[in-house]
Figure: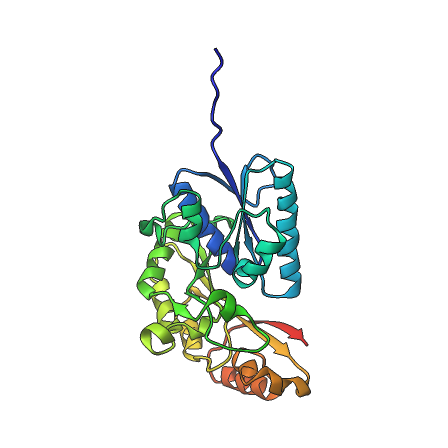
Length: 307
């Protein structure tokens, strides 16, 4: 007599967009594996019966990539090659109502802060004791460390607050714990990320505390390099340069986004255009002069986009 075997569910998590999305996917994978799910990340194999797409919705190119990916897997589901299709992330957060109507093949849509709800849909428990315990998908020598979520700016050209909510800093103690866990896994370099790295601490500590966080992270045994990404110029805490000077683990590197606009557009973009890192030449001259008076980084990476 033949017995029928029940195949275990296997989940393929697809990540689109920025490194902050990648961290979200890593947290999702960690939770799923703790619930005894078989999980792969960005796998090209066709053996997963459940697909979760973590989308980006920031710029038009990213939106189109997300929509194309969703449609591709919707087609795969229609052919019977996967059982369930779920979508999460920024695109889903911002356009869920429209997308539900246009792509009915998707079983459920989730926003950027709805991890417990997504897990519940999969009959998985959200395990609070796993906060800070994150499996990484990057090469083992480095990992991203997301120090805050969201943004308080209301720039007319940016939808980040709509998709990610207001700025929420993570406590220094929590970040140090996660850094220690990553170090135990062999991570040597931490790349600090956020929507606005230099805003860190204002909500929790009533002042910008990125330098204090750097000092605390430098005490973590096993971490050898710390690199700063998404550092915005508005009210830039020059004490960061002092931290670079006194802490050899902090790389002499700073990642700052810049964006240029025609003069006639600046008024319509509101004052946040400058606050968010879209400088004119006068603003850049001020920052350049300030850095000459401090132990400034030897590498200043700027991402410039002209509109």
